[in-house]
Image 1 (cartoon, rainbow, N blue to C red):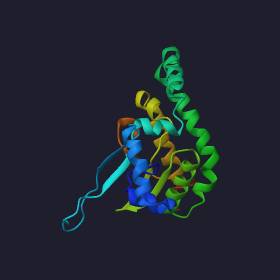
Image 2 (cartoon, one colour; image 1 turned 120 degrees about the vertical axis):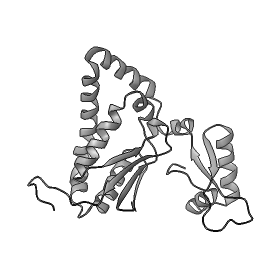
Image 3 (cartoon, rainbow, N blue to C red; image 1 turned 135 degrees about the vertical axis):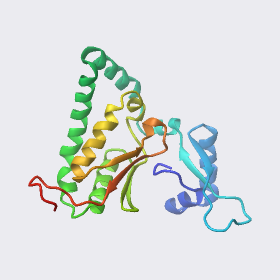
Image 4 (cartoon, rainbow, N blue to C red; image 1 turned 30 degrees about the horizontal axis):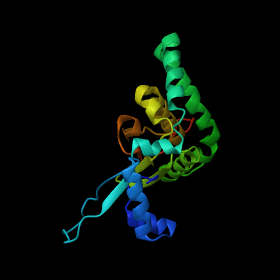
Length: 206
């Protein structure tokens, strides 16, 4: 569930446990309000059995992965906004994301194409606590962040998401489109990355 909606059978396979044991643990998470379920979409002809259930973390569940500082961070940003306005908040958000860019730029821009850069970005984000993944979808790549350490704060201060999206475009060398965010109530932060040539500093496609 850390990586998005999954079935109990899938979790059991990944962990090497029995489906019964995993289901018992997931049921406890659901009872505690830390996970929720929904029916998996059917594919092909409808079978006679019950549809599989997908499980995912709730906001309360995500809080177990490092959101304890949210109230303090939100209060600090409110104070910053009161003292310096929206520009001060945006400057803070840009400085925060620039540190991420500095740490991971070399590994990402060294990749030969959009697909490999998206995978490298997903690895970098996972190391920073975002449990990210990347896969090919249609005419581009889809980057998913299954956790967001600043989701509650970003719900109040969207500048955090906006500067992050701009940083992705910078690292990937192409325009990207943010399709969904946990901060807005979606299950996963999703970004579309078109398969277009990277434009280096010289201005010619790579």
